[in-house]
Image 1: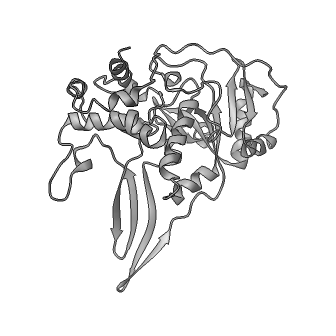
Image 2 (image 1 turned 30 degrees about the vertical axis):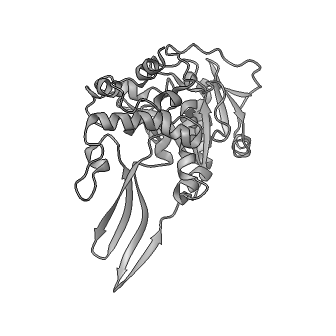
Image 3 (image 1 turned 90 degrees about the vertical axis):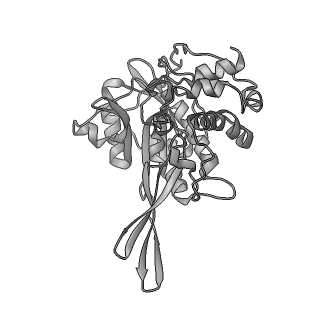
Length: 334
């Protein structure tokens, strides 16, 4: 593990920005998210490495709104033009381990063996992930209970493992892309021998058997309890690093148009509204039930992994305190 003093981190990030497009976690007037490092250099935002950001790095793979292709009417014919992908490698610095697991979940959806999304594939290939280990979890974090290692990120996603040693950062390449990236950097010092200590997470439970337990709970009264105060505002789905549903729309001006995909939410009434007016999820109960079962049962049955990564964002930001960890522990009797 090669190290650099924290005081010299800006110089290292500046080197990365010279060779790659660079996204870093920032605080912009109280909103924490990933943004171009140029914002930090220009003083627009401040580098934020104190905890997980509110808006996950999912946006670097599945933007909130994205053009899928252009089209142009030519008489009775229609010409279609594919959108160009990233033409330069992009570094995501400071991605937490729960979010690397979330990217692995997105891979199951967009890199399916039968149907592969070319735009997502382009971003996966072009992005280089510097994953930052968590020493000081937030009060709402529960990633360890969901099987995530806070010291070592998902090897299929992370390219460089970053450690916080207090007065310095350590860097360890875990992929060929990561090694090639580190080889371009100067100023890295001697190797560290001992990994930093990690404070324990406040929320702990054993999720073993949860998908099986939920199979028999479709009509359980618990759904009335947890949907009663839900506002269907969609906050939980928009800040979730694994929610991936989207709507497709056209933006047309004259004979030229764009086919756009934009994030959608199963919390919204229109999400499952059918052309004839039928609504299979007519109320809050049906929508909350679908969200929780998709996270904790359905995705597990299809891909043998949970769609909840324990980042705690939904519990932290829900305006009426609907808490998925409370739900899990109640189902399991813990």
